[in-house]
Amino acid sequence: MIDNSQVITVWGHGSGKDHKWERQILPEADFCQRRSGPGLTLLFLSTDLSETLRSTLRREYSLPKWVAESRIRRSNGFYSSNRASSTFKLIVKQVETMEGTAGRVGEYEWYEMTFHCVFKSNDRVTLLCFDVPKTRQDYLKGELCSSEVAVDTHTWFYTCQAALVHWIVDLYDDSIWAIRDVVRGIEKKRNNDARFERIDFSNLHDIQRHAIHVSETLKVTEEILSRYVKDIDAAFQYIPSSGTAADPEPVGGPGYEARQHIHVSYGRISALKHRSDSNEARLRNEINLAFNLLTQQDTKSMADDSQAMRRIAFVTLIFLPATFVSTIFSTSFFNYNPTPEPGNKGWNMSNMFWVYWVVTIPLTFMTWVLWRLLQQEWDEPVGSVPGKLSKQRKKSLMQRLSEPSMRKLEEGSAGHTK
Image (cartoon, rainbow, N blue to C red; front, side):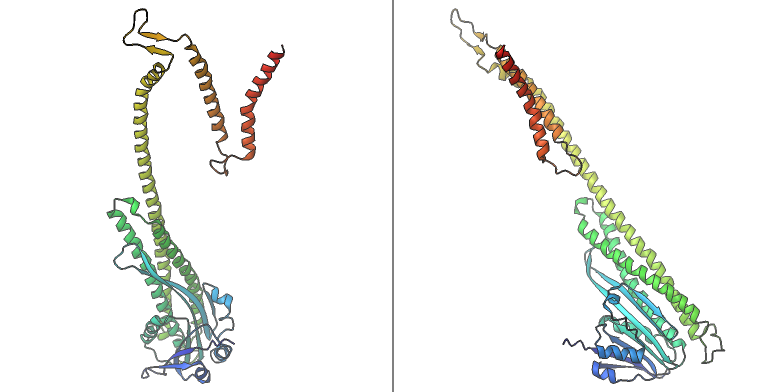
């Protein structure tokens, strides 16, 4: 049997401003025997839960049973809430730029985090943080510490979540601006580099892939926060400010500030979404521009090659008549004797010279006909393999080539019979 027990990091903050944060690192067995006291409790653990730990979290902290399911863990986000708890999962892709290299992405890491915040009584709030990287745990605790509110009212349940949402938005801010810095490095390199063949298209597509992932997770987070803000606005209509439901929450009170903080964080997410869309558009623009510039450069090279070929053809045409004449006169049909003897001319031409034309003209015509037939057969239809003839087309070609020969043979046979 696989032992999937784990070690849980517990941060506790007593009720009231005079208490300080205390840290405990507990094995799973000790944690299951622990009972939370008043104040704020911050738990860091993994979603690989054993049955014992899952039962403890369900009993003590009202953790939904579907949180650890494999299908839920594969999703890129979800949200659920009620008057006493809220549960949501968010994914953040953190990208690092390579130092000293503009326009390139270094290492990257996925943060697949699930949070469950539960309010048990007027002085007991617990925040369960699943799969939060250890390098980010102190930052999250520091964000909660910055919210100096006594843990003795229901509003601390929302103040805690406001600090959590602010921390999550900061992670997205770092991720999106990291992509932006890479894109800006590509733009600067392109402006300073006249040799367009240096552009690395594989690198551009890798960056585009990261930008697409960041945009995807950001859009999911925006939808989650949109639902969360609506629930917060509805819940604050019933939240008392001093323990009695008859007292409304005053403007400037801790609950009001938490609500405003959540609205600000939601506004930041919406703005970051536009920034992420801009990163994607700028990357597409760079890829299209690089491709067009290289195409333009290749077209210019092809034009230069075509010009050179025209010059070669022109030179060939100049020497072609002379070559043809010299070839004709070098045949045995002509004989030139520089020191003619008496009765023998210095220049002689054979009376069989007509044979040359009888052979050359039909052969030239047959060559032209054969080239035309092959040219028609080699015009491949759409979807065919270039340079390859099908069996049917080869058979058709052989039939077309053999028909004139068969016709001549038949005519010759008939003439012989006559």
